[in-house]
Image (cartoon, rainbow, N blue to C red; front, side):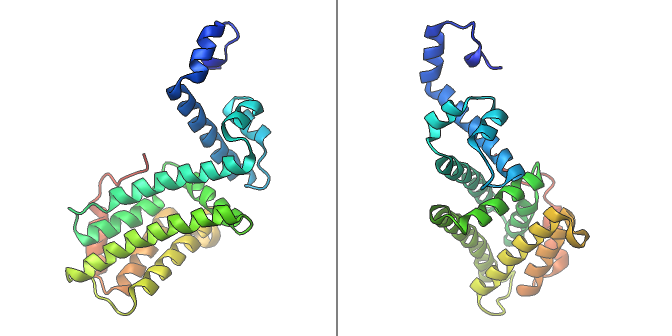
Length: 233
């Protein structure tokens, strides 16, 4: 139990910590992180505030104080996850990198995480919930459009530099890559067809090589050159 919840602390100290912005932000972040874990385990629809409270080690009342309703808590959890992904994607596409390195970094980021099941399990739950929640669907569209934009920029830069070749509509090709990524992630999560994370990354790179006439060996070399691939903060 943290100091903020020890019965022995003075009332004045408790009030100070309760109103301290840094403490409040840390508590909110802890609740959101706990919500993500519960969602992956139970699913969005079956997640209860009581489950989150138990996972976070706080009271239901405190969760309601910060977020009021479960819907707002779910939206905040998605927002936090989306911002983390957005920041990670942007770090992958720094202007100083060669096109193939930038593309390889994006592919590596897709499959690299401290906990693949946690990261992708959360996204799959958000995808499913967004079919029944219009507000969540708007956020899904926004973050996925950003992902497409970043990937498209990398592809167009590679084409402009003569490293990649356009065999048709770039937007259509990126749509195929995004669809492949989501499908492979689900297969990896479920263990279908003996799919693994390394196989998933390899298939994504193969698809990029085929769609844009890239030397697969050069793309593999760009991927292997990343000894320390960027990870979410």
